[in-house]
Image 1 (cartoon, rainbow, N blue to C red):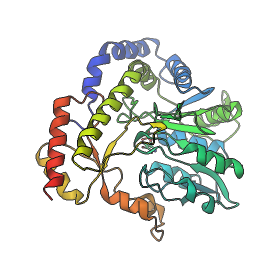
Image 2 (image 1 turned 180 degrees about the vertical axis):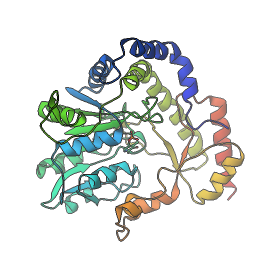
Image 3 (image 1 turned 90 degrees about the horizontal axis):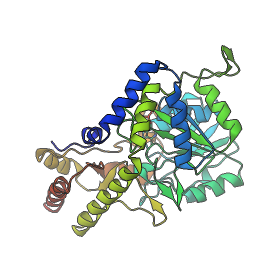
Image 4 (image 1 turned 90 degrees about the vertical axis):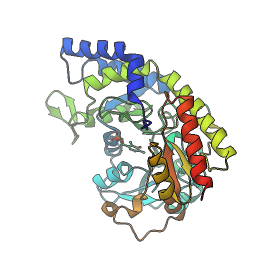
Length: 364
Ligand SMILES: *Cc1c(COP(=O)(O)O)cnc(C)c1O
């Protein structure tokens, strides 16, 4: 089987650094908030170009901490996209707020800014655009609408750490940005991990307090928080991975471009990236009709695939909004198909994948 994501090849490249960094943590023994966490926060903030980074325990907790820091709670409305991973809606529901789903632009799969204004009410307390598959939403348009109504914007950048929008780094584009270092994300730890970013010193302090049980001084808790700290081991691993990350992003783009060139020549619907964006291709996702048949044929050829995501969020039972109609998201959920994508995909494996997909799509 060709791997969908190849973490073993990556490990071979940075084995020494990973082992040295883990060894260091074992030696100093500061497993909670050890020095690696602070170094990582500094390096991540510098990479992104913002003043503050708060490392947290996962991408989901990053979103939760952001909503809590903005004081969003019972009865508030948060505008977001229905075409995302469940975490985006889950955190809104967890704080007692209501997700207000705005449909996507079918070309980019990100929230359609033109539809946002009509969804704003006096209860709207935030907008959460999601950079799906590694491409940022049209954040300038979204920020302009938000500014008009004095609403903060939280970038769900779980899939887009390392991407750029009009030359600016993802995670630097809005009031707060949240990313994930889940192992399969473009920058992945060896377990759960995430981070919040902001240029606002006060929000940064509040997010840090929330991530440590609302603690401002030792055993003094000024607000309700969570146990949302980043583990020192994960920080140590991310520090090693960050040293090769820029190269990996370039490799991802090179491999994605090669997919696009060859698949589109065979009239397959390939990803559309806005000319002012660069994607980190957290997923390389095509659209096909007759998806089940194609998945089965690829499986027979030992090519793994995945669907991001088969059910739009308003149709998830936990969300209880099945009555909504969001046609672009519903249509995309029926057609999208993600292919093996990682910086170590060889040309020969990629050619094999391209050949089988093309054969499968054409043989309809
Ligand atoms: C992965 C992901 C999350 C959640 O991140 P975790 O680290 O798995 O908690 C949130 N939003 C999106 C869009 C994601 O892809």
